[in-house]
Length: 155
Image (cartoon, rainbow, N blue to C red):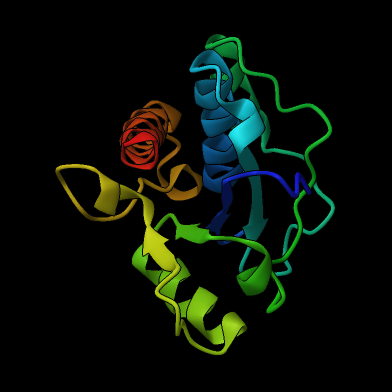
């Protein structure tokens, strides 16, 4: 972990193979392009154990690659209670993730657990492509959420 990072962010979804790794690598790309990557430490994790050790789901990987974003080497891991102390923000992709994140962390006393779309002008869930197969809508949600998050953090 970059101990000097001003912002430590963990993106979380159910399996850590679609939405949260997309958010992780989109955010890494945005902070790099903004010239502030040394101020950020960004990872992603799952609330479940179903996909632990698996790579990013191929359609999600392809969607990132369409935008010249590489996620090679990323494998799914489960969020742990200790992540609550390691990260400033734990960002869930949907309301079910938030419930599970609070359960894993034993609550949210510091108010660190938030939903990605809450940073945008429209709250709600990031579209889940696992069920819809629509990775473009997920891409749009993730990009909008990460851009809005970056704007908030850079103010």
